[in-house]
Image (cartoon, rainbow, N blue to C red; front, side, top):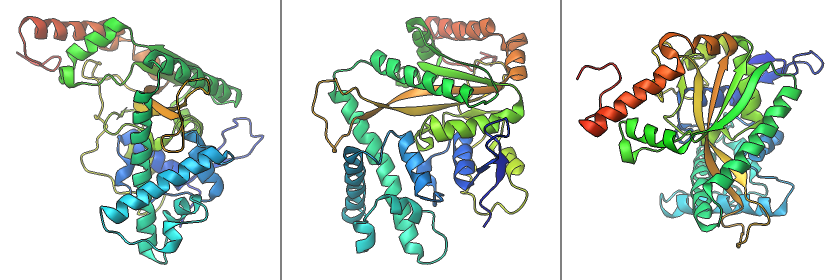
Length: 361
């Protein structure tokens, strides 16, 4: 089985040599670009414990900290209990109480041998994914901290990582963040077809512009490793017409790709597209539930049951410099985008009924 799919020099000066893009990175990138869910995976590819530690660190789980290890063990035990009690699955002693929970991450990607153990390991990781996120949401409701304060913490951390990315020599033209104003949020809620049932995902957003289209893959790889846990990218909210998933696979793999996760037929590059953008507006954008460790000074009781990590939704936009330039021309211009939104809002408030931009009444 081929492990090193593509050699990418993340230093961009040749001093550190190529950094191999393995199956885990390819799968993560494909999930992000297609807006799919990790719950539908049947295998996860962690090559060694170091890769598991790097993934856990992206969720702010530090295996060097006793509290974080206890939290990881607790979530694991909760997942196993659910599978045993609700789905009546039977676990071996080795899987029910592993010496190190990280061993289960490696087992979930194991090939050959006893298939049942791999399936149970993968199912357990899916439950851990859901339980950790659910309890983080519960924690966010129980602590006395505003959404604005959480955005401050997320923005500061992302900007620090952006500076590190530039210092690492990646070909960034610009990296900046912005927040939606109150009036923009109201406009978006009224313009969206779902109206009051809608969720505004992009209250905090960051735009990453690279020099060339060929720079998109290494920059995304760096972000997968360092910015956010890829498994908490919001399914169905990705839009990508710069680097289609199938084209990505063609670029990365010259031979058999049968080891990849199955691609659901309903996933297309149009998912998550903003209907008010111009027809040839091009970019990669996705929404990630971004983890934040709550300040130690925050009052309240924290333990391994809920941890100290909560999530806020952050939009990331990626594109190259030339595409960024053409995105501001013709019908793609921002003032025309806003005009289409305002026309929709005015029509709904005055006459009712939602129509896609350009659709005849």
